[in-house]
Each structure stands twice: as C-alpha cells, then as structure tokens.
Image (cartoon, rainbow, N blue to C red; front, side, top):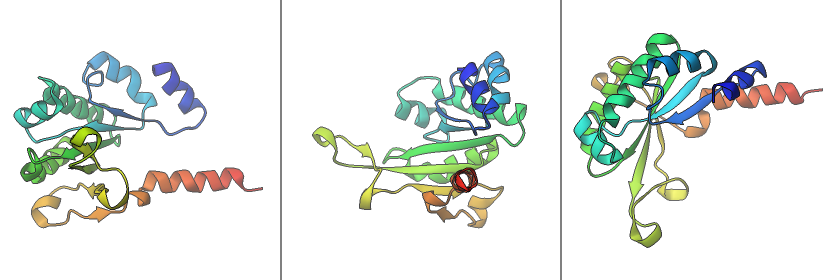
Length: 174
C-alpha cells in the first residue's frame, strides 16, 4: 500500500483513500503512510460510540476512526481529513453534533449521504443518483453550526476536482 502511495507521489499525483480508520489509528502505520497521503475520507456515522458503532456494526470503530482523524491531523498539518456520514433515521437528529465533532477533530469537510428506502429486496441503500441523490458537501469551520454558517455546495464544485480538471487541461495543451 505504502509503495503505491510513494509511486503515486513520485509521479506527481494527489493521493486519497476512503477508510474506516482502522490502520491509520495505528501510530507506526500512520507515520509511514502520511508523508505520501494527501487526504482521506473517513466514515463517521454519529457523534458518539453508541450511535456510530451500532450503524457501522463494529464495536470500537468509533474510537478507531476518531483516533485516526486526530492522528492524521496532528502528524500532518493541512492534511485533508474529510468525513462521510450516511444519514439514517437512527442518526439524523444527531447530525449537528456529528458536524460539531468533525469540526473539533479538524475535518475540512463533511459529506452527508441520505439513506433512502427501496433498492434490492426493499432494503435501504445510499442514494447516489437522480432525484434521490442527497449528497451534500458541508464546509466545516469553527463555530459554523452554532452561527448557522454551514453551507451546501454542489459536489461537482469540489476544489480538488476543479484542480484536477485544470491540471488535465494544462497537460493536454499543445
């Protein structure tokens, strides 16, 4: 894994992973990988262990993911710690506390994906396209929740994607 990240950086690529935080919560692994990792999207589904662990169906996962986020931000200032949370009837009312926790942990962004009824055999699934899509990008800044400064952004206007498109145009230019 680290070799792939190292090569990616050598080639000038931006590196990003989606994670539940298990490995990044381990000190030795985090110190080895972070020099080659620009950002990570951490799954965090509630503001406390009871909520998160129940939704993740993994006891202790809240402690690991919050430790991983803290560790990454501490070891590598400016690290892109992003949060992904799936909104369900079990955690929807706790969204403000989840965003406040993300802010306290040093997250730069929170992505909220709404869970919708339907899907295969009537099971709920995360909405990903069309009218059912409820993907929100929420800028997390100190005091944003309390001051009502939490704003929605279209997911296509993410600065990293914008940068990637600009870079692609530069490379393709004659």
